[in-house]
Image 1 (cartoon, rainbow, N blue to C red):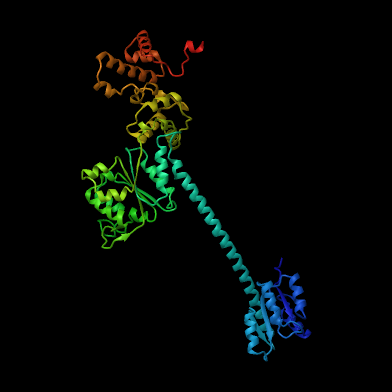
Image 2: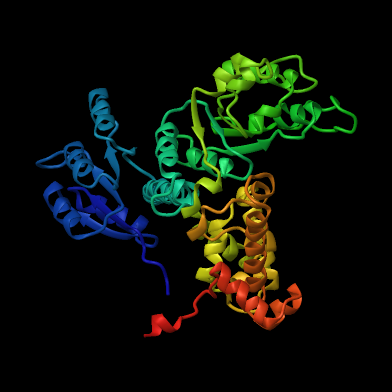
Length: 492
């Protein structure tokens, strides 16, 4: 199937001129003819015309007047006018003002006419392609911007404060509310709390809820890292500045430019590193290793510490100028022992994460297991809880993980209903008669052993060196009850 020939409109009041033009062009083009401007306008209404050849001198409207109308109504059509040698310079100016692509002088040569027609149709095609591409680029630009905004929204929702897990009415809620306020203000924030309380997650949420959310977020733990390594990681280095460094190394400050840098463990920074960070925090400038020139960056600094640094400042262990540069706002993250209502949510989430990583599907924790986990103080906070969930997963045989899988020191903690009981260390160092203190320890050992052995009294009595009668007496004496067991009175 052949392609459709381009359509050309020929306008001239002389019949022989129209016939000559048609003869020169009809092999390569679909030619329409008109004797005046009115006939040509009617043909333009009915046909998709790409190029017009129009004589200037015609009865009624002139060629320039007609092509001016064409420019307004069909601007994409390429307009060519045919003039005589006697046309004045004023008419040439009028032709230019009418947006004429080209003018031919009489007498014209057939080859010249054909070449002009082909060039004009090529120009028409180029203009159409340009217009189409422009529309596509505008559409793609809007589409890309829309997709980018959707990605940013998904990123903010996935890494924002919704990702900081907590239970209903959590003690963490006031902290989250403060952090949301600080996130929208481009100021440094000092976040302090015990190790494993989730300071990094809070810093990340603040970044992805800020105006810098589409820029990089970098973090570095300064605890236990030498000054040389910290300088290299933060400031970068020029090639040859260190042995074996054959190329420039980009530091985290430069990587986080226009974004956020979270420095955890700033309480452990040496005086030398504190001094180096003062310039970064106050001026936004630093000098890479091996460089003689300083560089400037636009970075929002978030800092983390295991405790409030004001005491360190008062005792001279931390520079006051650095403290006030980092602590334009402060956040205190409570430990897990003060967030017992968060334990079920956190434990289940950590368990499912571990199950996904290790390819061992589970359905969750039993209510009894959750009660024991809530009773524990979690001195290692989230890191200790994560380890415990992995350990329980390893030893699990059922889809629902029960309390028998929990570590012994956690099982020996008092249940939530008996929070008045003291910890083992407090019992040993406390007051009271020897009999009372020994009984409190004995009750914990009995509870832990029975739970771990799924309340199999024969196995528990054998492990503890007791008879079943003696074990039953101690269970009754301390009021220990098997979780989920229905007593006779409850049945009645």
